[in-house]
Image (cartoon, rainbow, N blue to C red; front, side, top):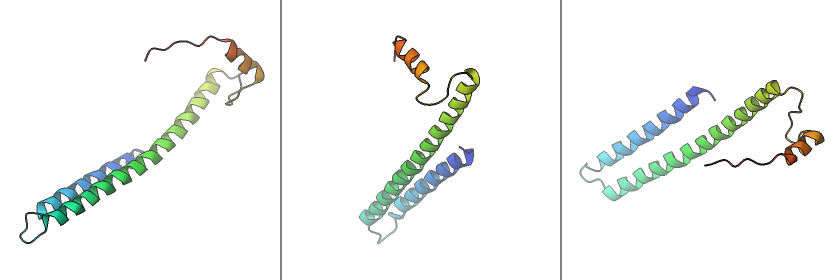
Length: 106
């Protein structure tokens, strides 16, 4: 993932936060309904949250895809004689079933 995507998301969040702060400061203006300003600020917070969540999920999916490709490439270099497919060959599948599973502390 290109670094500028992370930068753009950060800038988006900063600008929305600035907008929220500006709106809330406008509640000090005479004849402005504070509840209305608060409602608009909450809309902006919701927009920031949902937009950031959506973009972050897209970034996650792409990063996971790239990670998988890099892992397969590394695995192929490390063990060039084995098949680098998800299922593997019958022989490799039988070998993997025969190995005991290691306990890993979390």
